Image (cartoon, rainbow, N blue to C red; front, side, top):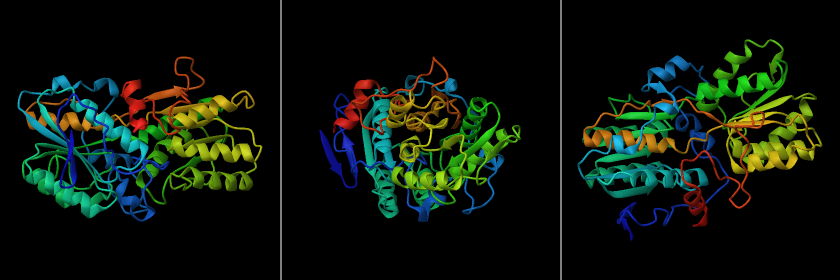
Length: 403
């Protein structure tokens, strides 16, 4: 059964479904720094993968200096390697839990927790985009003696005092995807995130290859000044520096607020402004669908498009590829599974077990229409924002959207 403990949801009976009472309604906005549709007013704090003022110059070295080891997905381990023997309770604290990316990450967290028999209670708290509620949720869990907490600190540095207090109280607390600032290992156990400069590099290399080293490219970012898009831009520019015949139109990320409708308006304007656009890079596949519709409405041939994976993004490629021979697509993972890494790190610490996994993970290419081994995945039976790079089995992924 599910019962409410103050501001958190408690699951008892690990054999039961973990998808009851998902807090908040589904939206089409982005989650996660992916991922994630956040209010512009807090974007720079929320999406930091290292903290700098809005508009500040981004340094990959600075980001890497504030986190743990950088590594690849083949260096990740399974839960049985860190499960230990002590009975513990775990919790996931979401600053905001009301869209599909968060629903999938919650299901991944609960699925991973099931793999450790020593986890006796699996708790979840949705801050509902209210930093004070999220702070109260963390404080409540600490007061209850929960041994391991994973937190998505949407409000960035505003969350640091509560996170630091939990760490000082002996809780194994791990932040993931969005940085709360401070110093991992000092203010909290660790910070787990994607290697966003590497994402930019991966997209840019694919675009350069697909365009045979020449053309005009647009990079669609998120909210104004957000550090995720700035980090990706650094990776893009480093690659394009080796291709003098590739021009990055505008020189930087074009703001879309990670919103499909806004992206459609923005791309419509870009098509009017620039008579030649040869490729698009976007850091939100779910938002890219609006840009694709802008091309279609303008009767402009679709061009190579690199993003991260989303069901509708792939479906639109399948629907339009025949009429657009130059239209190709590539995606990196939308990394809903990073919550599993964060949970394993927290569990390992609570159990007194070493976890050798990297903290910053290079994202693999998961779809590439130019590679027969990585065909785009479209499933019209699932919602447009379903994510197939999730580590959930197909039946559990469908169950997320059946609620």
